Amino acid sequence: MTSVPPAGAHGLLLVHAHPDDESINNGSTMARYAAEGVPVTLVTCTLGEGGEVIPPELAHLAQDRDDTLGAHRIGELAAAMRALGVTDHRFLGGPGRWRDSGMMGVADNDDPSCFWRADVDEAAGLLAAVIREVRPLVLVTYDEDGGYGHPDHIQAHRVALRGYELAADPAFGPELGAPWRIAKVYYNRVPRSVIEAALAETAAAAPFPGTAPVDQIPGVVDDRLVTTVLDNAAHAGAKAAAMRAHATQITVAGRHFALSNDLGQPLLATEYYELVRGPLGPGGPETDLFAGVAR
Ligand SMILES: [Zn+2]
Image 1 (spheres, protein in one colour):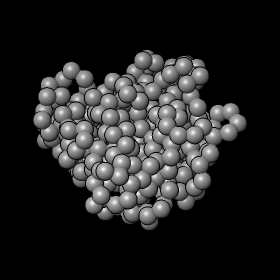
Image 2 (cartoon, helix red, strand yellow):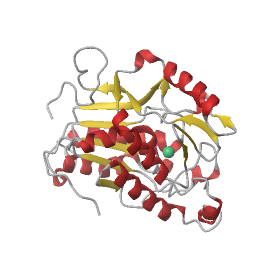
Image 3 (cartoon, helix red, strand yellow):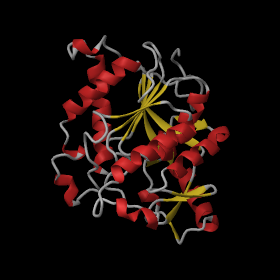
Image 4 (cartoon, helix red, strand yellow):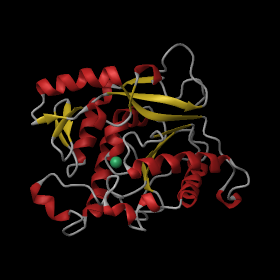
């Protein structure tokens, strides 16, 4: 069950590919706005059925064994949302509507039930219905490359932007409610200088056998493209707790973490964005996703 913000809620909507992406990319942002009383809605497009499983005692969940990882990850996501204080989280089209497509080039990409094979307009229509229901002012998703080329992340980008258009189009789905134009759209970003310095610290301090190369970190761009910097230090603990809730996917160690490849990455409490639609707030880099628009 989700708890639905009232119409006219004017909150934050995030569109993600798999359970865990929201906590890694936006955990401190979600915790911050939830704590401020801003309605936060998460839409996740797949159950992440194809993920590798880190804890040996849960290895049987994997797609090539019991294939029950998707159901398990519903519970992990729910626990992560409790850690962040977010009550409205949904799977696009309901849990399991589209399957995890796996990394680019694997056989799962050809499964007709995978998200990579989804009809973009069908998926975007479902998202547009959510947008008209919760009426967010801000949408957060990935860039055209999905941040790092994963098919489900690329598709989430396409569906998010198409859903944003359809929700505002009076000719689309009049039965789904009044048209709604989201005021601002952001891509998840990490400034190159920030991640390079943080990866050096991870290499020196984290208890992992290696460190992720910068080109495996989603959303890294030249610093000048970053429009918005959210210093969410007060919510670093909530972000770490949410990431730990995704225990099949993430190992957290202090201010660092690793995915199933066991390569260390920094756990960034400050989160970064690029504004791609809507007005840039006044006065230098924004420090609030709602800068320049009335909440
Ligand atoms: Zn993902």
